[in-house]
Length: 402
Image (cartoon, rainbow, N blue to C red; front, side, top):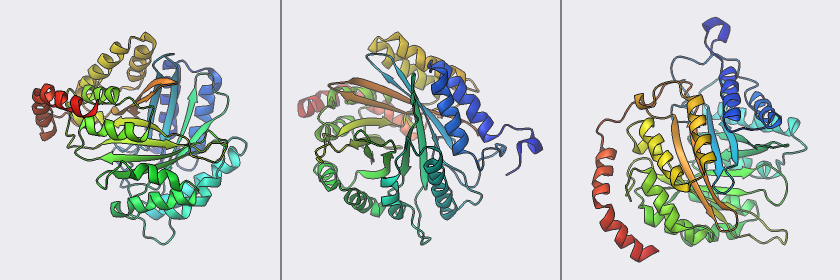
């Protein structure tokens, strides 16, 4: 990679810093919380952030965001309070485009966390499972080595770090075995039993995540893809595992975000996340679930995505949430929204009986190029066909599921 001085282009760190500052102010973080995020991204990019952003996507295509930028942002907003939680996701970049090089860089950053955040980060669980996800035998073939995220609420006083690992590092066919082995290693065998009572072999584990904050609230999270899933079926699975999930609201969320389709979602699969915690008595607590939808894959351009999200948030009736979303998009966009896709990547929805609902929107850094507008492809034709049959299928699904 060439330096910024040689190309006159912004560096990864300068661009990420600018975007984080803009987003922090868009969602009204306090200055100290903003500094926590800025300091964190500096650590995350300390060995490569001074490289100039190239004109084209590098050989190693990061799956952090839609255009393969190694950084992604998200904002989680509480329906009841309107409070926003800002997060970034980063994949530490290596000098060589090989799984081994990226594994080494990921382990290097684990060491940075250990040095810089020893009072607020616990890496015991990472060290216990790193041989599963970051093997040293040269056999890794997953889509990524490790992602890291840091989040901050408005008045945050300590950093919140997570690590995301790829259970398909030895192939999709071994992903379930990786999840079982990892949960067993962490003393959470019961969590695997909870999952397998509802999930099917066609539901594919694609991310395994750990909260890195110490203490009983630290979660273990398993993310699943649901290829060709129907909204009602996915919502029912999530509710069967996570008792605080409202399947009716989850189904409505999927239909709204897909542009009116109850499924099947034949493009990039919808996803779910099951989050586990251990109680102080050593027993597994009831898991919590989150629904994820890859909205950019089911819309012609970002302006249509914005329309769907604004309609959804308007129904909630909390103006603070709507404004947080609008300001975030406005400060990050570099082009007309109708000119491409990918500024929006995912949207997520979490329902809880005790703490209310949370909506999260994910935004690409778009350090490279926007995805092209979808004109008339199979997914949009599928969407239109499904919209025409929504009333028939929704009525049937309601009888079966609600």
